Image (cartoon, one colour):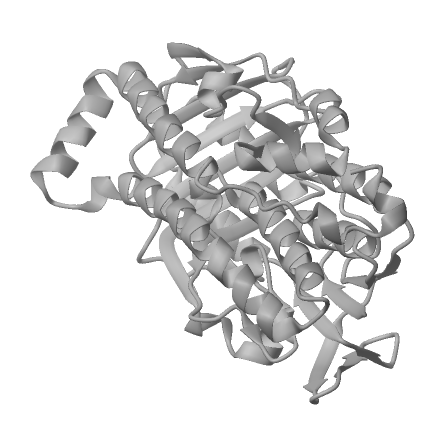
Length: 408
């Protein structure tokens, strides 16, 4: 069975790994010219850690973790108001692992085996018949596959082609996120420094093995409509939103135009009534993005890819049955994790509401900002831990190819 996967991120690479082990023939198409390395920090938690062990990559992921030593919370003048361990600040408990996204992707690719990879190409059209899908590529012409998996992120091309415009499924959380590299002029050694208030966060961190540091901004702006294709407009929005904040913010904004890498996006979720249409199915952020506000995007992407591949194997490639069971297994888990993102976004925007709760939160953040921020972080950790373990992984090992079963 030939399966095309769009996207060489954590979900796409994981789906390809398991499909190959079940005897399918996966092909990955990725618009980037090569595997994307670097990027921002992500976490793998709860049930997803068990999955890494099943794949035989857990030790490699742990060995490559960011090794963040701590976090320093400051006020808008740069005065230290609290210090936390790296794990406490990152909501990590037990064996939870933080790793740079590109490093995780490289580890997954290194364990992928013989899978066809089409870099620097995109899907233009997907036609479906009762027997196959016909895919028109930008560079590789027309090819036939038995199924197509869209693992191509929040702004999924496959979803747009098959299911319709993004606006039909996008749940905007009223927040924007920005990350870019800056020189490590503060000489940070696996440390993060953050200024936070209701509606605005600014941070700088260095992770292990990175010569540079990363600047990060997150802000509530429900009334702003920022063009996600216009970096100049995005940069001007940051200058406007963060005007009046001292600490390192002015310098980070001064460096901003020269940054070689640039991530700017809305914090949003994807809410779809169905994740499949005929022989096409979505997984990861393309199907059910929970947003970075959940702290669980990578984990539910990895688990979703595992379940999808496993259900295709269990159904002997009968896609209608496999896709239905994939949704049946994943829906409750996804909903629990999307609820995390909604709660975090609501808290971030609470300063806008003219309510007693909103007023009280603002006063507490002003009077005891360090303690208040720590309380918010600890409360979020409890919710994330519960949601990260809100699924029991099914055992699909009986469907491994005979020469693969001994290594499972």
